Every structure is written in structure tokens, then in C-alpha cells.
Amino acid sequence: MLGLNYLHQEGVIHRDLKPDNILLTSEDMDNCDVKIADLGFACNHKENGTDVVLGSPLYIAPELFAQQPYDSKIDVWSLGIITF
Image (cartoon, rainbow, N blue to C red; front, top):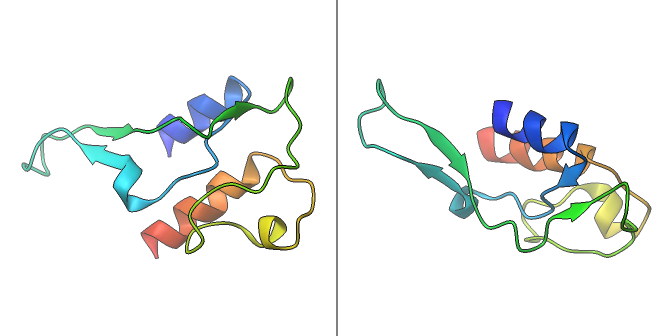
């Protein structure tokens, strides 16, 4: 969540969060860093429009299915699906 918070503070929406894009630096869960990967669909929501539907179908927010404008909250939705 801290990495996602940092991206959002910088104005970046990932738009394709899924388990494949969350990497662990070690198999030792007591001494492990989590990294967010694959920023290929990422955009700066302050500069670019947020009307393009992107992402993996199992993890995208309802706004995307409805083709409505969206913001960084779609990443929080995806993270919630992943943790569930």
C-alpha cells in the first residue's frame, strides 16, 4: 500500500495491478520487500485523460467496465481484489 500511495502522490495511476505485477524480493517473509512492477499502462492522471479502459479483467474497477471517468481509486480497488 505504501508503494501505491507513493505513485498516487506523484500523480501516477498504475491501471494494471494484479498479482503478477507485485514482486517479492525474497522467499523469507520476515525479511522481504514488496515491489510494484510493469508500469506499461501507467499514466499521469494530471496530464493524460483517464477515459481509456485498460487492465486485467479480473482486477479492474466497476468504473472501467461502465466506461466512466476514473481516478487513482481504481488502483485501490485492484489492490482490494488482490488482498481478498
